[in-house]
Length: 190
Image (cartoon, rainbow, N blue to C red):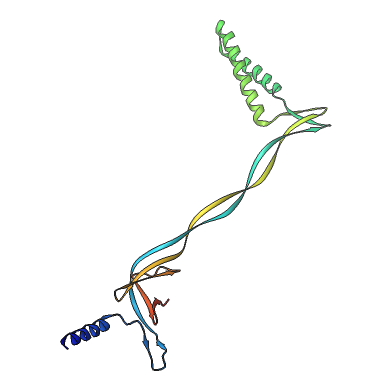
């Protein structure tokens, strides 16, 4: 008899210490209640997404085209000769004896270089009867590259309620505590 009393006492104590998840009312319906659970672990669910990124790539392409009546060509000869003559005359004014000859040659060389450079900057042209002209045109094409991004799409949440461990997938980070709905089981209330 004593052993039966001990067994009944142990069974009653075990039943009272077990977590009660839900209560039934008089009609057999489960009563729902809300409580707080402690969040143990949160792992983000990451998906790799790929999306196309398009952009225009433009470049200059040389094009030779024929112009029958007029061809513009650069002429630097006149400016180079004029610069050499002026530079030679100035060099001739500076020197004496054999130095005058060297100063004249140096002045002509320097003056020719300055005249040629000046003509290139101005863009001197002369006309001819026709021919090919080099021109540049802009060409563009669309290029598509794929950009990959890591995107968090949810969270695997592990939480503890009254000593038992539960798992849930959620669309947001719950923080340190999680409001749970207690009826037939324990589920996040959010």
